[in-house]
Length: 55
Image (tube, rainbow, N blue to C red; front, side):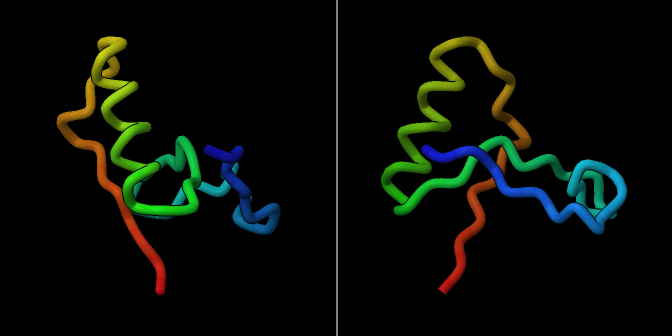
């Protein structure tokens, strides 16, 4: 997992207007699933977590 990249022109730490926060960026869907599993295993509330893909 790599560090999220923020749009410096967004003015609010790169948060989209809908209130979403990027917590990570992964190269594949499988890596993203493992990251969410890791968060869940460590008691991070993932009920409203979304994996979004491009391409």
